[in-house]
Length: 326
Image (cartoon, rainbow, N blue to C red; front, side):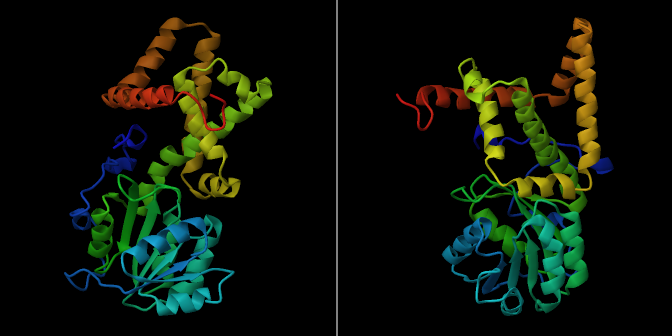
């Protein structure tokens, strides 16, 4: 696993549920099988992708086609309607903008065959999973690939599965993902959304705020690079990566996760507390505050230092960015 793929354990709610990755071969043992009808894995033949012409839809279309499945793709621009795609498919995957997902689920859910499977690929899980359960009679597995469409394969990539009503599809799905060395995490929709307040909510929020802070300070980003440390460049590369994507996606991630506001208020409160310590020039308080943060990370900080050093060495050895003159 690379340095950018490290994962720390996060306590989720009162259940002290951590984000450890499950063994793909045993992941299905940890889910509640509410409508388990058979001990054998499902054997679907036709995969339907609603939103199949988008980047993620195309990624999954190529993946399943390489695995030998017939794949139907439907969108606003295809001759095949979303309704017909749902009727003809054994597995239906919805990968459209988050704010349109629940409406689409309600539209096509009743059309999916009872022995089929309905999945969504959104970054929010509570509302879509609830809609899938209420709008269909088929198996339901909420899904969140923790990556974008530019990756080459599932290898060492996290994918969260919320098997709300998995039937006999979870062994099939975890098997095909495990075959390609994906890191499978089984979670409830509530556990997923709690974790995303940290993995996405606070991370994206702080990145956007960072850019506005630089803008208001009147500092051109290129000038900061003239003074940058390797760590600053790595950090700003991650910020720039976020800012290069569609703002509508990040708006939905921030606004539609019902647990984000509480997490963001805690982030702002802690930032204000740290600012007060700095303005007061209270070095003792600063050291205590810093130590508390360090103690929270535990051994993770040593792992983080090791892998980030490897990344920095790579960037230093590379010597220049794309487009720069040697």
